[in-house]
Image (cartoon, rainbow, N blue to C red; front, side, top):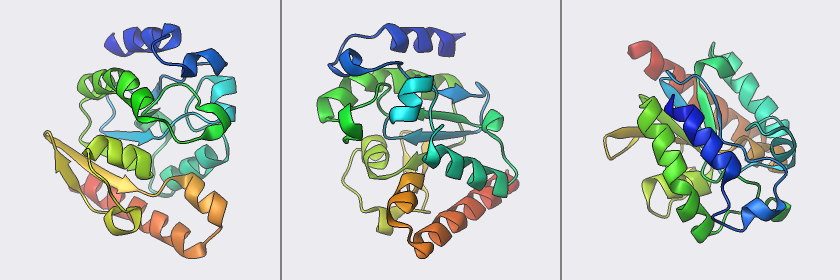
Length: 184
């Protein structure tokens, strides 16, 4: 299976400096037949330790939002734009994203999801290829290269700000996602 090949390539990759400080590469996880793919920014400390995406506090919130609309991790595919943790959880640099992008493109091509959820500004800008404001773009389908992208706030945004309105916006975006799924 191509996803396993990509995962092995990610685990042995030495193409950018991020591999030097990583504990584990984080290729992604979930169903190879997923209709929905989530793309985040990059692994954090918990993800680096476990080799799995979204297993820390942001992942727990993501799990609750998925559960709210009747989905589980096994129903979707979850990955990031870069597969190794940037030091101190900084935003991935352009060269790191560029070097890692073929892995992500191979995952997208293999899974061929109906909807790609971009979580947060870096993932959204990377996938859409343009500068965006999450407050202006979240919850609105964006079409590019034959794919439907559905930008959402990253769960970590709520965890950092603890803004109740941000959480409500996230819940609304997930309910809208549920409606899209049900219309299929």
